[in-house]
Image (cartoon, rainbow, N blue to C red; front, side):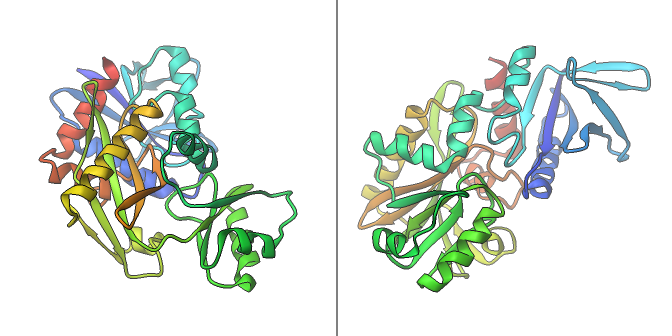
Length: 323
């Protein structure tokens, strides 16, 4: 029986969401194949947290734990950390150095995709449509007039390296721009100001199924709020329609671009990318390499629509990693 370390938590605002995702993985892993361990990665240390909520410190020398005198080492790592140090790849060289396979793409690919600016720059070079944007560092001089002239209003202000819509604002006037920029800088020292695209928003899950790229049924997102913010994502303030009601031509375009993005970036594991469809053309927004994995999350909904249960989904991720 393979021993699986499900890493969760992390150092970002997405800590609690990651714990929920990690626990969903543990709950649904086939019990006859895997013995799963909840490994909480926190700023104060790394710990195995038992079902009884007892904590055992992880030995970082070889990524092992000691339970009542019994040393346990892991065959594979399931990465369920949203944000840093999981989704941005920061922790992955450690496992690669130890020779422990993991369910994510290689660390450099994770670092790339977690950085919205760099991902967009790479995809633009391959002809993938994206929204116009302006990049700002915390130390840059902010010229509101120049940004508004280049990007237009309304627009979005978002952290360059953050998820779950933390720090994002939709800006309608120049007066709203600076408060939105300051809000985004609380999440990251780099931000993006992005042009508003007036179209239908869709979310596209892609997996590596035994070496083959597979696009899952597409989800259309209809937010009750002004955009797909934290409330819309996690507090039921949106409709998530899977499969999306799209004509065949538009659907085929999305599948083609989603496949191209996944393969051009040389990704592995699970991913979920967001697109805005404008006049039949899908515009890439961003990609999540550790998407939400709870039963209510979009990615598992897409898998279920494809006839893939959570146990099969997580089992496939681990089998692919082990190969």
